[in-house]
Image (cartoon, rainbow, N blue to C red; front, side, top):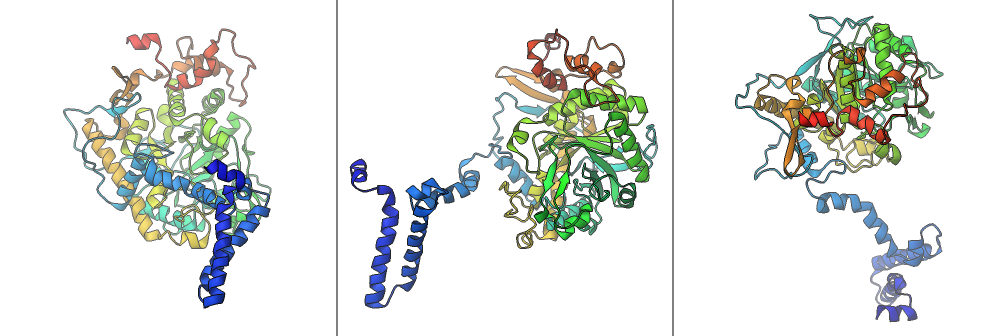
Length: 580
């Protein structure tokens, strides 16, 4: 029937024809009875829209389906929200599931987060993990778990040019998010929440803005390749400007950013139109001028120079804990940095490992999906390497990458972390609904926009309280996990406490599924070490980020592309380990 009708008259024009008919009918009513002017205006607008659709050349759908074709674009526009609220299940993660988001919202609001009727997770699914509990649980006096960074008052760091102002950091802190990426109200609320909860707020590479200073919360100042807040007019590093900011008592640690999980090795550009007077003042650039973050640093070019630069930052800051953040890439580059530590005697006070799971920064899809090592692989390789050269006790490890719950923190501790950072978790505590419009300036909750009207929706005192409550509730849950395992501190959690399901009939301790390095093992023969160390450690030089040999040994197996992940600790267990 439809096909026969379509051969006589294009059915796709029906909506447009009905609009024309409605306009004629409403005009008749207006002339004959002097009623219906609003109806005339509505149909006139629809007819004008249809005429425009037929004449425009940008959208083929609108040329073929005038008027009604706009419904398609409207549905496409609201599709993410429709899927999020009505279609996806509680456990579907894209990138965070409804269950994860609900947990953050409940804890941020101070609502009960207990759930009845058992877990929604499939405990028989491959990859399901749990913490083994103890029949002799502990009772801890507080959930305020902390770790000393930069030595401690009793045991100073033995590094060359050592830290003299160690920081007692919470094990859960706000990850790097810059003013400019986040709104002024978001920065104000995050920092006030950090002040209330006694934890640290990483500035991101956009430097310290006036909004970071209002409430006086502890700051980790991130120094990126653009040297924002400590740059000369030509974009090079300025010692004087760095010292002026770094010696501020509110700044507790200095973090040199090498790369970030969202887009490692990419750099960034903030268009001049977005460089407002406030952003320009914070970054030390000109208002309205395009702001470039190069993909690499100009202050150093070799691993040894990098260690010397870290020592310089530590000295200029007055001895504050100084370290770096990176997303793991070529393993020989990381090994080269470690060899530079051994050569110079200079060790960073901390290293933050960022996972390629991404973060708050918008990035090209290829970088988001396929560049950089995931957090588990990166953290394990960094931890094992430091153990292998007897430097692990001198360097604290932080990590960031989809950390939401207390179990996420416990699992990262089991893999070698000393503390965890969260970016998107604290954004959700501010009210973020995962609309994924962070880069458009149209954030519906005022978290990631510079639009003054949109960000007014974010009421600072209320959201600051939620930030502090999310932190407190998460650490309270971590306290209960630690107690249930019979331990005294999250740092006591090891891979022996985590169990993973391998198949329907087999489970394994995480400690049997990851590579574990013996202390000092990399300082001797490498024959017994995993391939990633045997192959890449000899290629690394403290004096260059480049591999010293252009080709790998011919004996490397065909599946060498799997070596990186395997050595980081998550590949299949070797036969001997399986027998154990």
